[in-house]
Length: 135
Image (tube, rainbow, N blue to C red; front, side, top):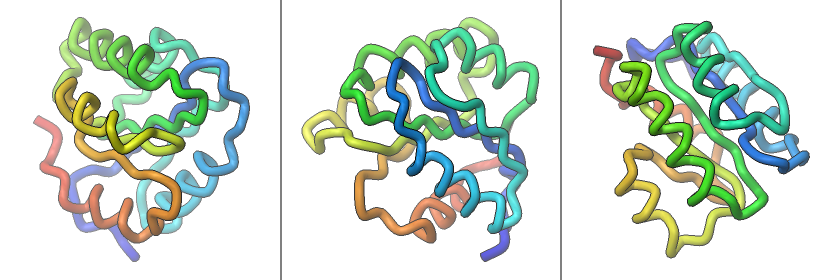
């Protein structure tokens, strides 16, 4: 389960007021065990806090975890903040409780992968290993 991509540093973040972080922690640990350096920001992060952490940590990818249903409100703010800071090239993937009918809207704003309940950890690792290198 080792990483073979140029993606090395991954930030896992919990935007919004959602306080449930078990899934994010499980994904963060699996990514770490697969050979990635993982920065976990903790719960209740604003989009601005996530963007600032991404800048400070010089991450190669960002995973957003959400259960609150605010993904269509919060994720665009994260992506806009990254774009405003010349970091729009950083791939974003997400997971949590996201209705399938919202997947396309997330892809349309630039999210590269959406993973719902029941997704295997290996599927997420394989997805990251297939991401292109940071520009």
